[in-house]
Length: 447
Image 1 (cartoon, rainbow, N blue to C red):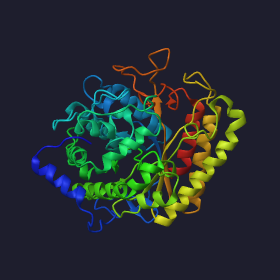
Image 2: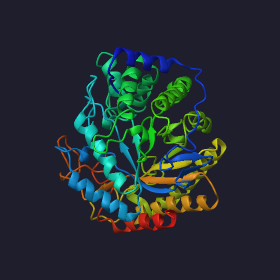
Image 3: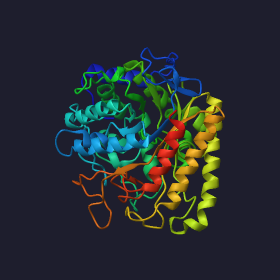
Image 4: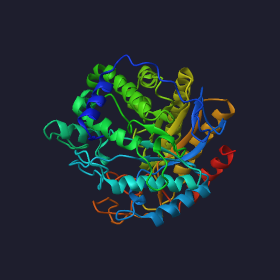
């Protein structure tokens, strides 16, 4: 992420960034504390047993966890209780956000360009982890974002390049200019210093609620380098950038291992869709001994594998592509001998522009069932699939505006981030069919 504390720390970060031939980092297969999730070949393990989970994405948890506005601890407690009742025991949450001029980026943020970070949000993260611990949940915490909605990599570049940036989906800068520009992040020494300084602050933090150092907290399952990092958007940029991209993954993961020898580390990759559709890129991005498991994301609507306005006619074709996508990543994880987590998957409600919780979720529920059935079958086959995190939990929140658009200052945080229609992919507390699919799968997996 962003800034750090001292000139010495900045120098250490740069040295680590530039260290190519680092020694092998052992994977934490058997942590000293058996409550901390470790790895054993293609399995996650906890308390000496295979650790499999039904999970959710809840990026906004730290915002609700704060003691003052925009905090909402009473609501967060209710949401955790609902998720626990469904059998959800892992949450993927945002542990960073960079104060940004980018359109639709969330405020408040964990940090700006300076070396003093937002203690209110960090305390919100502390409180979130403390409440998760009470419920036996574990957390995956991502430490920056490739995309704009939490500031992310473009904001780091903006801080160090004299104030230049572009917005995602700006007609003046059509796709793939945004991801191509973001690729500069991996080799920008000044941006990397800011990012590593923030990593040090979070990973080395002691929870102000529990007194537990983050580095020894069993509630944390993994640190994640970023949400959906890509080597670029076009082949013309991404392919020449691959060595720098791999180096950034390996070097950043090793840097975190220096700060925390206990916890797992993952990339946050979408898999093939974030890897210019090349299996060798997925393999090389996850080959580092400092990367403990493989991740993939599945978005049939975003990838035009189906049409929201014609689900009856296009669902089956999309489902076939989903099955192939899962099978490809299972095969890749087997080659790497590492666990695999489907840490994002999302599907719209029935019909185009359908965001209100009163609209049915017939096809969404079928899609969830497909994902869950694939995981259950892979468990029977002793495969690498360890769990999943649906995108995302909306809970009791409802859109505050007729156009279902998030506006800065809104406090009804949903799983749908601020750049998306509120209610597009998230699961509401009233979505009985989707919750039934989640709970049924949890009953089969949480044994």
